[in-house]
Image (cartoon, rainbow, N blue to C red):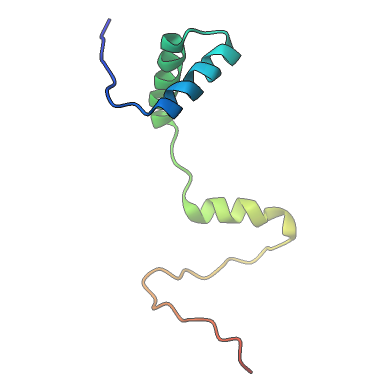
Length: 82
């Protein structure tokens, strides 16, 4: 098993980590192990692209037509004047 030391950890982070470990019934060391395991396991989950996330958010609103691709176009500021 590997070991490493974390230096210069803020007291606030350490305190919150201890509380989190207590809530889960773990030692602080085991809590850190769990956090690290979960962090590296998430790397294998493919990231959902922004357009897909936006489409999913508005899927229940009845929007059925495709939205135009805006990549590479100049940004136009909104005007609220008539």
